Length: 299
Image 1: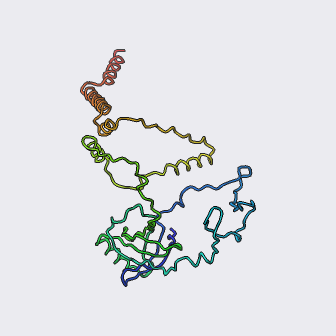
Image 2 (image 1 turned 90 degrees about the horizontal axis):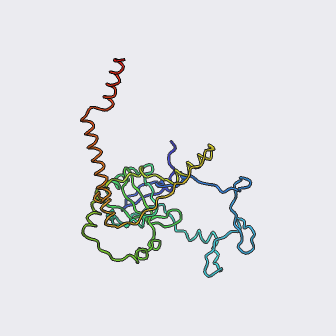
Image 3 (image 1 turned 45 degrees about the horizontal axis):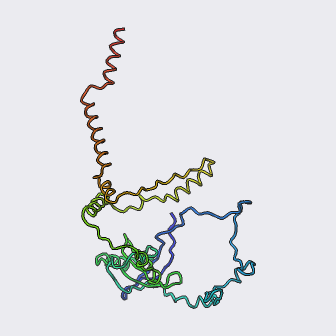
């Protein structure tokens, strides 16, 4: 098995203690099915080309430069060396600024997770930090330059190691007020709330990521396989259209208190009763066999 390749190597520092660490990707989309764009006529792959929006001529790579639009159609040109000079200096150190309660940061700020492991000789200090954070039930806020940008990172104990999650900046997180501004102020009490609590209680479980299927990926994989094998292509099933119903009645049905649920229970009980009734009498099949046996002997 090939060892994973570190995305970043440096040091994690808390107080005057520092230890070498390596950062590994925790979530990746590289295993998803990927498509190439082809020329339908020739079957060959096509190449992406940059075209001048005014002249229509292709623009070679060495003639391309970054620009920032200041007005409609007017740009400030930024040369590669100017952009490189603006990139923050990296000392390869994850400097912990503070330890905070694990639940203090809203998960809406979470960006991308990375596994953080000791690199070579830093194991003792790494384990000390991990176990100290576990005992204190805290997470750490740290900063470092990752992939050319100064990033804020949330560090938490995770199994035998640590997990480092890059955080979105405040200006990147949209206000929830816009999404919820048209939501009316409603207060639900009484039977409806009690039924909702009951349904939630009956559906309690645990999180297991392995139980969740990527249905799109599975469907595309089956489509590709069918094309390779020359089989009939799978047909898309019509989605069931949910019907509008009374909220209270729907809650009662979900909690097993509605008319349909009572009818189902009654039918189930009737079937069980009939089964017990049949079991209490000699079986019809046994009677038939006995009759056949007597007929054969008489003959």
